[in-house]
Length: 80
Image (tube, rainbow, N blue to C red):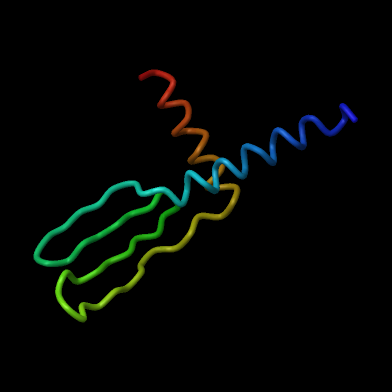
């Protein structure tokens, strides 16, 4: 069973990276429009008025790209 340890560790890190990717990177509001950016590259916009429009821009990073971005973020957090 020990031959699968590396596969299990990698899958756990991939799942952690996907969870991190769905977290909010920042929120910015200006001129009645709220922008919510996520770690995975998506940006959602919402007009802050009754019956305001909602739309999404950007695209989700591929799993490999998200995994690399997550690794960089983890490395940056170690120094703090």
